[in-house]
Image 1 (cartoon, helix red, strand yellow):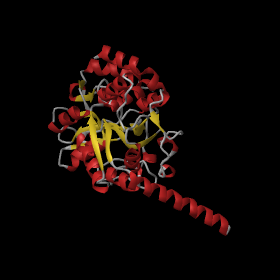
Image 2: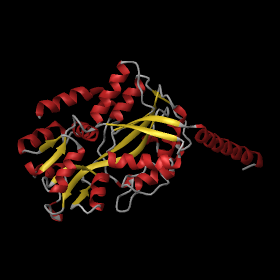
Image 3: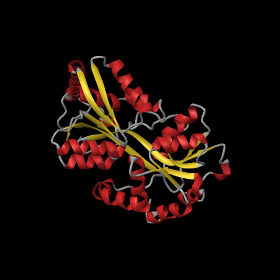
Image 4: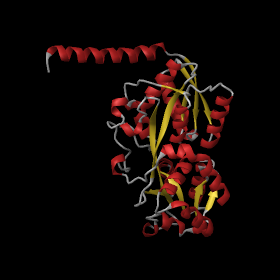
Length: 329
């Protein structure tokens, strides 16, 4: 490489770093942060950010995925989306928001470390985390040789099996979409679940608490939630199903009408940074960056067998999917 080229590259890198530093130094005030992440995860992340950036305060509006989406679209209908930053579990939501022009692009310096499949090509949103839905089981009730290896075996547990409602849980909504799009699973799985007495409870927290308490033997569970409960001594474990789990990117984005866009960019950059991703890894999440290792005991993203999901199709057909599920249950 010629000296002039090296000098140019060094200059561009220095300029990018200067821009990032200046952005962080200039940002202050409060950001309105809308999220469906469970509180015992998102609150420590906010605390870590505010400790590093004491000049910025994060005002959290927390709700379940479906309720959060309803809040967002109600504000849009009123012409006043108040969110500076949105971080939720449903990629279809962000595709809809992008299409309707309610997001703004963010040219983050961290994009090169995030695989293309985990970021919008127009920089409108990025996966802030990846989590997987497989099978959670109570180790007091399920022996190792009884752990379901397929989604069909899950159904054999009947009333001892449970899932959170796709009408409330964003992850379960996407899992429903993945099942419906899979010819080997389809709507028939849900019809069989009803016939066998598989229980449907409101949210992810409800179904996880039932598993920990021994009310359920197996659940449609989320890897980081099960890992966190196990780390606290609960008799639970997580299984990656052989035919595939739902591997779900959870997008983070800046609202088009953000009142504090500079602080919003600093917050998003923290989440996408190596330091921010390590905060998530320490809480049992898989990282979105290629230069951050997975939590101990969990596979790397490329080792996971994942069900295929067409998120654009889900964005288009969401209402009819929810209506059909409501008719079943």
